[in-house]
Image (cartoon, rainbow, N blue to C red; front, side):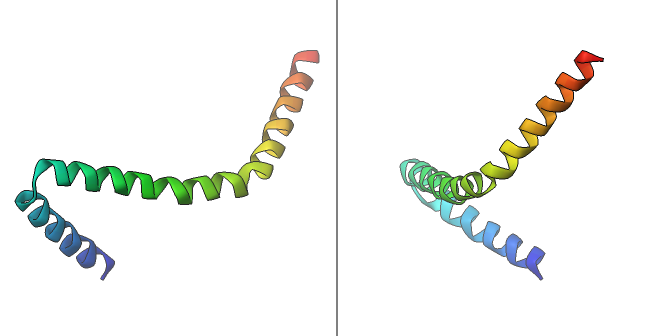
Length: 68
């Protein structure tokens, strides 16, 4: 079902994009890219403690290997 919905949505945007001006298409594309920044930033903030923990563990393991 999601596959069909995606294809229909894609088709609608292809038709709109073909009938709109290039300036409008580029502005819409830029706005959608900007909209993707917000969930990514939230994810980065939420995952930062786990990433820091894993980096610290990785660096500790590398130092242990070098001292052997």
